[in-house]
Length: 319
Image (tube, rainbow, N blue to C red; front, side, top):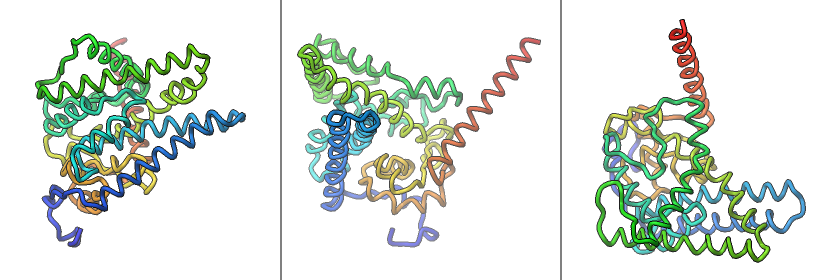
């Protein structure tokens, strides 16, 4: 920011900013890095005979699939390119490995921004941040592979003409885009089946299926800090959302998702511009953490405390 954070006002967090040429080049570079690391993972998984390297390749591929969704998230907000139509062009492929429709995700996610803190809030990834933090809930949501089954059901509904938006109303043009994307997802699924039938099932296993075992829980861990243990019934972004200062690595890997208060305050601001607003967040926001380890320690402490409370209540009822 141009002024010192100590003299700036909280409304400066909500200041809009347009995508400029530097922002666009920055995002394109992020795409290049993400696809290059994925290619490295594929090479390690398929072209090496050493199991440790193959496992490392699977982990890297899965980590990129989760990272791609964070890049897709920026496209949802049209904060990556100067021309709006480029966001869908870049955003659709980023969701293919995890069967996340760009257009479906976009309409649901923008509703999340609009209705955060109300009963109408409904995020695309269904973790309920208002539920008590327990080990059981955390493990269940981290291993929520059922969402992939839900995406397959959406593909079937798209091809049978029965897909409808179930969270309010959307424009017919948006519905056509969602249906087209779910129909498109049939292509990689059929390709995977064909490769397996032709004796190339190992390729499908190492490049797609096994990495999903990494990607799903990793994506959950990236999304978890956003609103959990915040003031969930408040509509004030300074109390219902969390930001994590983080390191350069966590900021890169989450594509700025750690700066979530800044993002909710001004969702069309390019992600790479949010860091300059973080000092303001630290001054005015209620829920901030210096690092991801600190946040996860707080989550573990809360889950342990809730576990002890539940056991005590069970013991009291038993008496």
